[in-house]
Length: 386
Image 1: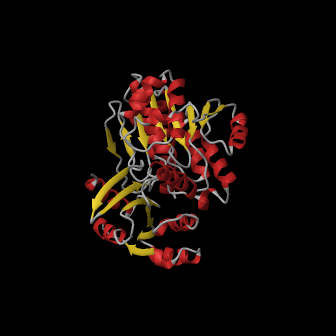
Image 2 (image 1 turned 90 degrees about the vertical axis):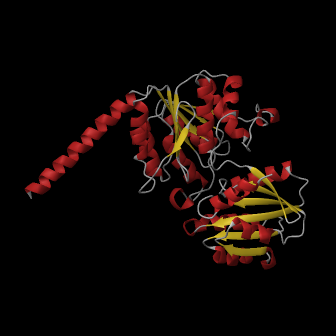
C-alpha cells in the first residue's frame, strides 16, 4: 500500500514538473502558427515557413502525416522517427526543441484527428497566436463525423482564444465564424481571387491557389510582403505528398503519371483530377491507380463511388484490399472489364498492365493514399521521368 502511494505521488510530481517545464518553453517562443484543415496542411505549413524565412525571420516548422519532418531555420530538414506511432505529445517535444533555439516563429501542422485531441493540442499545448484552417471536407468521418458540420466543429477546436484565425474555407464559414466570435478571436476568410496564373507558374510542382493565398496572407500579417514571400516559397522543398506529374515513355506509350495520392478524400481528389485534366487536355487516355489499404477501407469505398461518375479507360487496384474494392466497384456500376485488381505490385508490373490500354497517350492518376504500395509507385515514376 505504501509503495502504491509513493508511486502515485511520484507520478503526480512528474506531471506537475512537466506542466511547468512546458509553460516555460512556450513562453520562450514569441509566435506559434498552428495549421489545421482537411487538405493542404503540410503544404501550407511549408509555404508559410518558407515565406517567413525569406523575410529574414528565424523559423522552425514541423509537418506531420505519413512523412513527418522538422524544418530548420536554414531550410534544411530531417525526418522525425516515430518508434511507437503518432502521439500528440510529440508537439511538446517540438516546442521544447524550438524554445532552445532563439526563433521568431514556430509553424506547426496539427497532428490530432479526434475532436478531443484537437482541442487539447491547441488549448493545453500549442496556444497559437495565429491559427489556420485550410478547409473542411467530409473526411475521417469515423472519428470526426458523421457529417461535414461535425468535421468543421472538430477543426474549430484549434481556433485560439483571443487570437487570429485565417481560412480558405467558404462553404461552412458562418459556422467557423460563430466559434471564433465565442473565443474572441479575429476570423478572416482569405480568397484566392488575387492569385494569378502567373503566380502559380513559379512552382515546380502543382500547388493550389487556396494554399498560396492563405500562406501569403499569414506572411503579410507577419510583416513579409508578397513579392518577398513568394520567392521564398518557389525555392522551398515540396511536401512528399505534393502533386507532381512525371512523363514516362515506354513500350510505344506516353504515360503522364499524376501523383495525386495526398488528395485522398473524394472532393479533393475530384477537384485535383479536374484541374490536371484541364492542363493536359491533349491526352486522350485516362487510367486510375487506386491504392487500397486495410486501415483505409472507408476511404477507398468513398473514392470508388466518386469514380463511378468519371470516364476512364481502366481502374487499377493496388495494395491490400484490391479484391474487396473490385467487388464494391462492380456493385457501383463500374464495368468489370475496366477493373484490374493487381494487389501489391511493383512499378514494372503496373506499367505493363496500363500499357494494355489502347490510347498511345495516357494520363495516369495515382489516388487513395501514399502509404503502403503508393510510395514505391511514386518513386518508380519519379526515377524514370523524362
